[in-house]
Image (cartoon, rainbow, N blue to C red; front, side, top):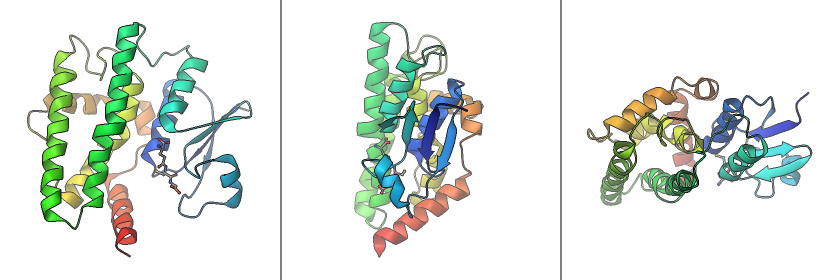
Length: 221
Ligand SMILES: N[C@@H](CCC(=O)N[C@@H](CS)C(=O)NCC(=O)O)C(=O)O
């Protein structure tokens, strides 16, 4: 029996990134599925923010997906998911921060402003700008390898993958477009879809379309 439990929700991109880290690190874990729209009372005793993912390791509770992943990296270093070099580690953290503070909010704005055409135009431009920035500042500067940090898969890849998985739904629902310039990001995405950690955690685009459509209905009512 594993010492690690993860409270997760199959549709949650944040929980997905921590499940991907557990799989990449080949750590056995018990998966406890929580319906976040109908949370059991006992879950609130485990999760201070009432959110998934929550990791319990040796009886201790850790939450916030990026912090869970850093914890797993430090506690279980056998399969490393961060660069060895200090400077490269700092760069990896900068890209994780960029995901949390720039790329993900731009995706959320597409959903939030779905009824506001003028704002949505600005959102499309912004998303395009951010993707091109990633292409040029990260992928085009990598000297070798097609992962975010070059040759090896790291926590950075896991940070972004769930949100790129949902790009098909952004396209379908909000007319988001993939900039033609972003060929290297595309290559990265092809590589990510081959990972066992992705194959075991992804959901088809139809499921994401349904999830976002339901969220929009809830926001409208
Ligand atoms: N910053 C958190 C975000 C987690 C999050 O927003 N989880 C959502 C599901 S995708 C949730 O549990 N929502 C339930 C709620 O807010 O009541 C992380 O990275 O872990």
